[in-house]
Amino acid sequence: MSISGERRKYFKSEARSLLRYNYLKQVFMTGVIILLTFGLNAVKINIIKLFGLEHSFYSMPVNMLFDLLTLFITIPLYIGVIYVNIKLFEGENISVGGMFYYFSSFANILDCYKFITAIAARFIAFALPFLFTGALFPVLKELFEFFLPEDINAINAEIAMVCASLIYLIAFSCAL
Image (spheres, helix red, strand yellow):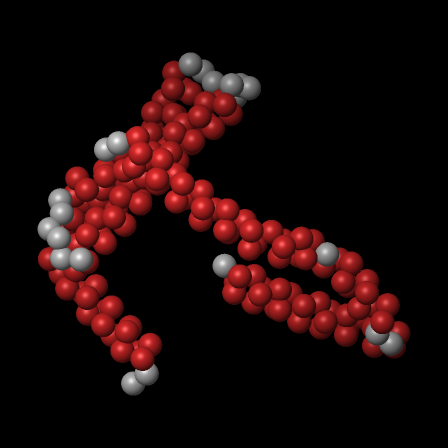
């Protein structure tokens, strides 16, 4: 068995032992995040209906406000779930309340948002060049049609576009 196969086997056995004794913690933490998200959406819908904003101009800012609030609350909770799982994996017996670790101080929540910002910046830095090259696909088709012989132009241009699209998708997925 290869080294990667051995590592995979080790991580699977560790994950099984982690979940065997902490399954209810995982379910509860996931349930808290789902219920919080549903609760904030219910509050948003009720506020919109209470003030009669369903079809007005002001429904969009209220929707955006509550969606941003949900985003800024749930991101530290998701990272807190990862924090709890890391501590459980290291062998510590941490309670479910550990998922609120990033809300314990202002410095912790800033660290969480710095982490998410760094991940988003890397994603954008790697994805942006591929998005620009994807926008050039119509120009590529015209170039393929220009350089290919005229008698088999249409079929080969389509095949070349499919090949270019596949190369683009593979390169984009490797960049992430």
